[in-house]
Amino acid sequence: MWCCISRERPQTPKRYLPIDSGGAGIALKGRIFKSKPVDRTNINQFIRAKEVRVIDPEGKQVGVVSITEALKSAAEFGLDLVEISPNANPPVCKIMDYGRYKYEQTKKKQEAKKKQTTFQLKEIKVRPNTDDHDLQVKIGYIKKFIDKKDKVKVTVMFRGREITLSQLGRDMLAKIAEETADVAVVEQYPKFEGRTLMMVLSPR
Image (tube, rainbow, N blue to C red; front, side):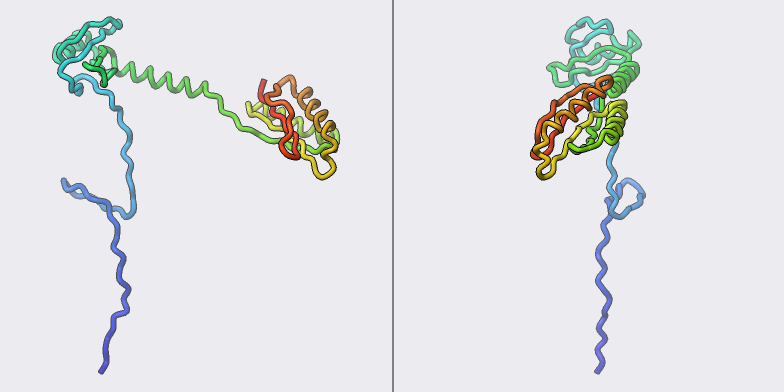
């Protein structure tokens, strides 16, 4: 008697995103979509409170009025009613040109971002017996980094008995600080960290 045994592997169930029941859709395997953040500021008819404290376009307090009266006042000015303090009781609304307000806020954020200073901490390593030619080359690199508004950590590395040459390392860092004084200032003066002597320079 012959017995037939199926050797087909069981199929792993596929994962699909749910499809909106309101219509046809496409199910994509393993894809996750993130919704774009939206502006949560309530304006005009989207303000839910029945009463609001109103500020006119000149910044003067109008007082607490019904939302209907507030919307009417905004319409008379030809402007928007914007909820600026939704958690207050009652919420505070200001009559303003909302489009212009959003433009000014975006412009302020862009200007603030431009003023933020970003820098990298570069590192230059020297030895206590580094000759003058190599030292001048490294000083050139330091000046290039400083010109790019980066900070530079200058490290003197001691090996074995070279630790007895610590004063030579300090003299070397002093020379570097002197020759870069036109573009840099010493932010952190020479100090030992284990068997290394380090100093930090920042743009002047």
